[in-house]
Image (spheres, rainbow, N blue to C red):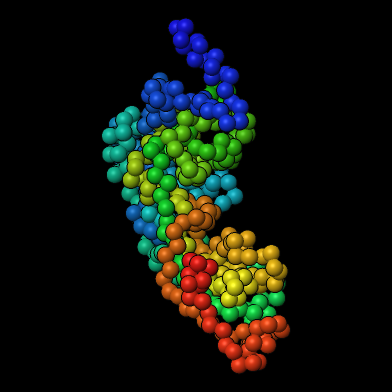
Length: 401
């Protein structure tokens, strides 16, 4: 006991610059004593499961849950028709439970709460859903085509936002370039792959509110979504974030949705409910670091000074870099971190693939003599004297790759 007390006192003295600071939760984690959402057990607790869409894009014609509700051991089956308040997550277009269309494989159509996971799984199989399949949208370019199927039919097209940025004298900047490189970069989706999948437990309180335990990263959103969904005051909803078994930004979306849906089941069953998501579901329905297609054009002088950048495709940006001596390549690694122009389906957040490995799909290099510049200087005089500079291939590799 004495050594333990001495160790605790030592920990309290640490924390200065350059000193090792023990993690506040380090001891319980290395001992396996941390309690995660999946470990929570409440008296008379039910187990919830979600029925997810089998199609990437389809109109929802009907949802018949009569047979599932009649199965012994089933306490509640919830569809969009049973939601008393807002049927979407906040002000977004993403439904809590689908009521008109499904927009990706994994969209939730119904929820079941039962005495066991086995009974819940059997109940899901008894829910009869009628779909009308629609043409899917898989790629941004496909989604931006005039003939593309609309993911959301209350808008004119599938472009979430078209963001334009123009800076500097663009035409003059291009004319000042000795080397112009154009490439298309493709970045894949990235799964967060946290060890603990999304889970949530919800229970009704005697005062008419709820308590929600969730493996999430945003307590306020769960509270606001749940209050709007159930048409109750926000102060009736208490949210407790359990120890997260990883998140990396990914549980800022699916973690919130899981908490909100667990609350809906508990509200309908009037009993505590643990909503369970397995690994396959988590990968199919959770948000990812978004794939992107970026068409990038860069121009520089032969001594490595960046003059102009244009980015299009999934992110449309055009920059004309002023000719200032201190603005070199290293300080101008900008231009692509804008709101992406792409199709976003419900279940996706907004995150750019910054820092991922870029795989060039095509390349076009254009070299021009300095004499074609619109500016004077040594280069123009050199060209007038019949001397044509040659782009430096080795330097181009360093500049643009």
